[in-house]
Image (cartoon, helix red, strand yellow):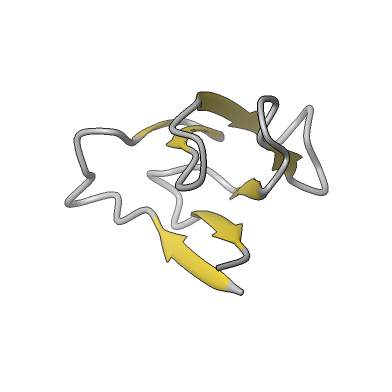
Length: 72
């Protein structure tokens, strides 16, 4: 399983993280999707292909984490 964490201080162009919501680009199909800590407590699968899963735990400015996982 591959994993990429969002670095709040150096986000890539295809990433965004505001509060406890994070935007990811699926590494398998390139679909952009939003993950909300409040709505997706166990992460959210890519809505297009389902081959990646995004997670958002805690807020960006409060030391939280946001990451995406997928199988190679």
